Length: 466
Image (cartoon, rainbow, N blue to C red):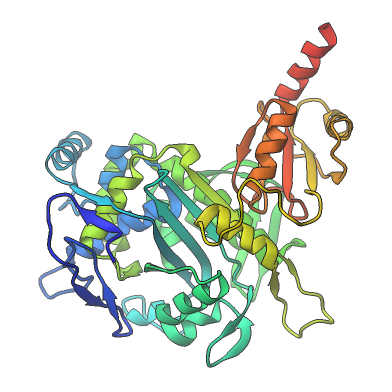
């Protein structure tokens, strides 16, 4: 496998072993395996480098050069911002000769806490996957696409049977998890894996100084099963690590695991924004030291460098997120509660985001007419109803009005809730304004959610003067 190549070497591919002892081909110019344990001489450089890379692919993919280099550089002791920037500049001029040669698919899993296991044990990675993200890094069009796979997704796990996809890692580690994802997602090849233990997120947010997130509703209750007290006010909040975990794990709504996926994507956007801040730089040494123990991967150092080199050049619009389309199971279908994947919409996502399949991208999907939710986020109370009438006049029929979005927006958003980018672009062309956002943070019942901003009011004002 030669998807990550070095510009400065020509060695033949070598082989490393993953944690199950299976051979994993490395890449041209890449011969340094990831050690599974800390050496007696100190912290392995691979894990120091990797912590930053994981944060890059799972949370940002578009940070500034200085911050990203800060995230991957194992600096000794406390480093002043000016000294750190000099080191980063020197590294940038002298190194990072690795590049991504062809598309790479990486499975990222956040692992649940394993009862009775010490934080220092490698068994912390043996639990169920609380979060599962499949990323495609594609140098042909300079994009990173992220698929959120709900933990309750119903799958067939070899040797186990029909169950939830989060069981795969607990039953067979990353090898089995990769196999299940391949089987479920139309045979996609998973090139590498990343596992992050549950404690990483909370400590990470704290060391970053918190993240700014819009909390759409009051969240307040005690969850005894999760041993979690949730108490968040509605509105824009700077959340610390504990509060960010509350936000991510909130379940007292009608959306269950899917609501969690939405909030995970919201936090990914917030973390991406945080990494772009120069104020992160002084915290880098503490971040690196803290994160070593929370990471497991079969990526080599050279592969990490190639992916970081790719990531720092990305723009905001080059990073797209989507959730695996499906529906909740009904009580009379199964004893357990599942997310039942929609095979047809899965196929579209795999074609449009991962280039798996051979459907003609210019042909419309063969499913029912696109379902559009209209959500008023403007300063005018009746704007949502007006926009529904406007879409009807354009010939759209499968439209409904949903609850207002409390945070007023200046620009209208077309949120691609289930991955249908083609319909979103068509809709954008029809209305002539608004931005397309590829993320599953809109109304769950919709294919597209239009968050109507104040630019709609400006459009109406211009029309009324003509």
